[in-house]
Image (tube, helix red, strand yellow):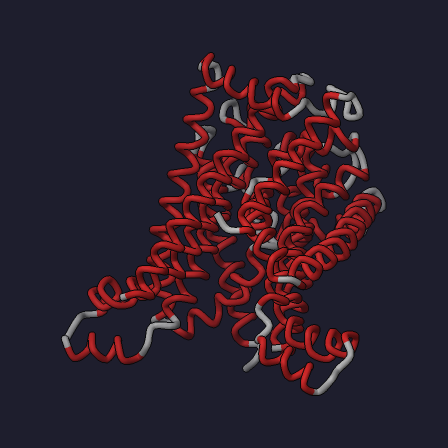
Length: 240
Length: 250
């Protein structure tokens, strides 16, 4: 019963894909069965694995930076009412700007290669993580804090037992959004300015119009992103 | 203006001033960045010369089309989905994982289906924006108090009229949040797609200027995007606040 809905969704998506394939043909996309075959072949290909490793490495670094910096910024700014009020519109504005536009600036500052990818991934992730963390702290009910005072908890105890518990679900939401955006940012970084990584392979396949390749890489990325997302979502639900 | 507002202006002024100083003193070389004052000057020059007017108009129009389509389709889809809980349960995980999908990977497919014109760019903007609209509209529709729906039943409103007269008006503030996100996502989608492949538009001109190390065009164009997006975002934010205040008073 628990598995029926997800399986149904996958079946619907596969059917839609197959129908689209029948309508558009080989020029537009490759069929589900061929793509899956191609993915298994690709994952066994020694030339392909370094690219996956490169992307994972860039992504891990970018996400670590986004997580650390985002939480630090968010928790600090959320701690006082004034800083939160000053920072929120700025963070929202930063969240809404298309960061693709800033890509050339990142390249000019960091040069082509690993640091640019990591930086581009990180700037995508920092803003949502800090925004959610800041609001999580700001939205804690004052009665919780008053209770902590009444119970004479030390600041450390207050942070650990009250603040963190109350704010954690929203912080995890921010981390989940930040995860997705960091992954997209890293891939975009690889697409526009790199010689290695999945984003680079994707861009190369696009310019050569190798549909099978494009679809296979996309499938790998989507499955990876959806899997991590599902884990974080389950964690979020349990915390609530 | 409030203390927070003044402090915010001060923070922004200090950041821009620091960038200006670093560029003027040569700590940041002119090949990397040009000072903010030169960006503004360049932007005014570009707007006056009319050299990129066609690109700017194309991009803004495509973004507008993507937003409109995403709003209409998103609200309609959410209204239908809300009345079909079984279908909605199936689609929920897709919505939750949606923004983890690198949408640009579907760009070649969209070019094959939609041709080489403006449509693929619009489609990317639409695809990014529509789910934000759906999620926020659903969030609002879920909160319609049962008493309002009962009143609608007492007045014998049909499903369509209940949606138009009761459900959607009630969900309006939530749909507005979706609208704000749709604006942001449409800009991201359209300009990002212009970066990858296209032969006009603001994104294309920025990429072209970058490839030619033409910072005197690139930075003003980037500034233009930032100014446009932030201005729209700020005005929507103010409008939303006014709407909420009016609702609270009545």
